[in-house]
Image (cartoon, helix red, strand yellow):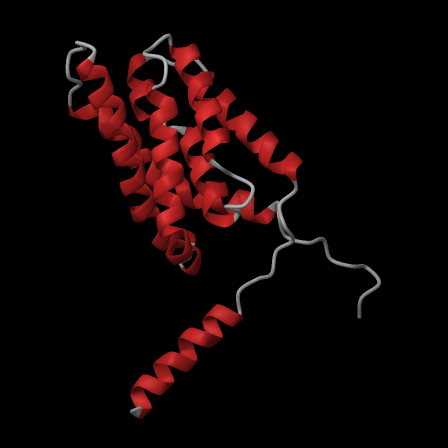
Length: 183
């Protein structure tokens, strides 16, 4: 192995080993964050602000499935999607299917995404959000709805922008408390 490749491997290994260790997320933290995400999605807004609002439930589902896939599954995502469908009075199952696809995609890319910092994760999570929104649009179109204009996909852009602070907040809530008796 050449020296440059060896240095690169050592740097990658050191950055991976230098990551913070987190305690496993409690079930209460996951449940509370998912409920908060649904509440943020349920807040009524005017049309202009509604187009800019990211899908907080999808962001929370993606975060928990990336960082704790054993605690987030298709069933939870499907149930949250049904709640979104009922609240929007839309086609029953469109958000449920979209959130299930979100879980699938973040499961497939989860190992790779965990190696990146939130800033590097944002474009990849944005792609997942774009696919999710496309599924919702395709289901609506198959029901005879009019196609949305380009501004419908602004929520994906704001989802990318809000991924970093959302990820940071949820990560900070998982860090262990410092031990006052430690040296």
